[in-house]
Length: 446
Ligand SMILES: Cc1cc2nc3c(=O)[nH]c(=O)nc-3n(C[C@H](O)[C@H](O)[C@H](O)COP(=O)(O)OP(=O)(O)OC[C@H]3O[C@@H](n4cnc5c(N)ncnc54)[C@H](O)[C@@H]3O)c2cc1C
Image 1 (cartoon, rainbow, N blue to C red):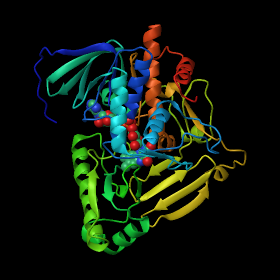
Image 2: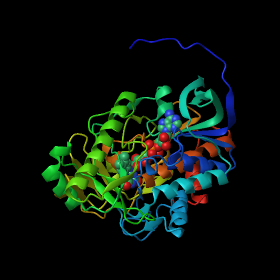
Image 3: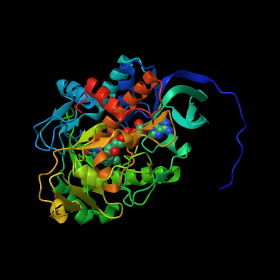
Image 4: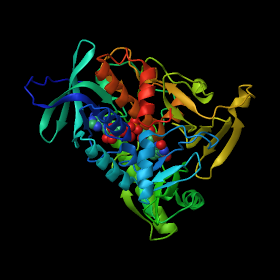
């Protein structure tokens, strides 16, 4: 690639404070809120015009179960619980005892709820603002650069949380990164007026998909609390692209939207003329891009067998859920050993038991944990990642990638930054057991 040289210039220092959070999905927002509640001065920058990331801009409206596998003990609480309780009171969330659905909410109501919570905590916010570069001093980040309607600016903080999903700050810091063999494909989600069952879609696509350039894909859908008659649809995948790259991201947006509109046209023609997309995600939903190395790599064996840690910062029950990168299948593995592989809208299934395959017949774990070191980088003293860039093999990532888990990573990152500031120490020197204790004190079920 040819290069040009950008001239050095003075730029304004827009904000100075304790902690800067890059990216405003619930992961970033929860990091910011936790740190602010521990007394830190916090800023959050988000490239879109509202908080929530995939849950709002991507319209994905399910946070999975906060109970253990037997629905006996609450193993997740904290800010996820606070948000769902607030939305449920307003009729904007529905809670049920189903591990794979559990907490459905209205994504538009989540936008309002996150706005409210961030403002209540006095967190300095910049929307329409991209993280755009970094300056370092030894093993520390000195400041980050942002780009928005004011042009280029700088932010200086004691600590930085990278909650950009793709790990944009980690990329610029040249933290070692890797891609899993099964990079999960993205989906363009939308809200449709009217319900359609999987059977209707299967029939429509099998018989008329070719006419609209649609293949038999695996997707899911469901109601949206607070929006009667509207359903959430995640019916398509876009295969073979790396969405951390600008060109692929653009192509995937175009292809995802083409598929969404093609399905709408097909339903209008062959099922009912009344179907219409009433809300299209403002950003394609990205399941996975690069992962970055930290002190501990989460792995499927430890996770699904329920290994315990004194410095656990996350607990979960959601299954390993891997959307295949190259066909229309999904592989699910549950804590109790169930293994399902589903293909296409017709949900053709292969059943098995991964525990029996390993020769295990002891009791299964009711929930899993990951330790604090999963979030701790080897080098940068004042940076912590949180979110889907997590250091995890494909099986562990399949479970950890869901929001009930990324939310907890955010809370842990915020708490860790606040503790480091308090103790005047680096992320690497911080005792993870203190992070766990502070998370519990702030409402987590750890
Ligand atoms: C279609 C689909 C369905 C899914 N279904 C479920 C489900 O039912 N339940 C579930 O829990 N999970 C589900 N997932 C997975 C889950 O939604 C994601 O793994 C999770 O939301 C990732 O969170 P994150 O905070 O790491 O990243 P993101 O949600 O991608 O958030 C990153 C945030 O950072 C911002 N950002 C990025 N770069 C910059 C930058 N340079 N400067 C400033 N801001 C930036 C983005 O705008 C965004 O707000 C699904 C995912 C998809 C795509």
